[in-house]
Length: 102
Image 1 (cartoon, rainbow, N blue to C red):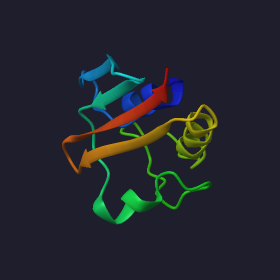
Image 2 (cartoon, rainbow, N blue to C red):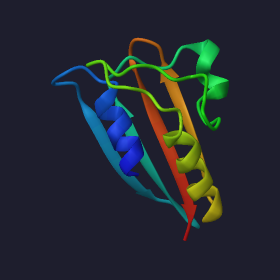
Image 3 (cartoon, helix red, strand yellow):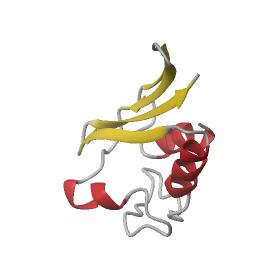
């Protein structure tokens, strides 16, 4: 979760809005991290969870990309029997979803 919130901050403009939600569903819970940032271009969407991803992008204030965080987030989520995915529109923001069984 720390990585998802950190990325939301990293890729959003100063004073951009970031929302974190927890939804309780029947047999799982879903955490959503939504930002109002730069979004993910279509040509990078299939690569964001790759280890040492080619989808690395500098943050809005020039923060260095490493390409590890989302891959590690996916590994941790899946180790708990969950799944992680996102919806994104370039220039409008991204929402990451983490679903974990109860």
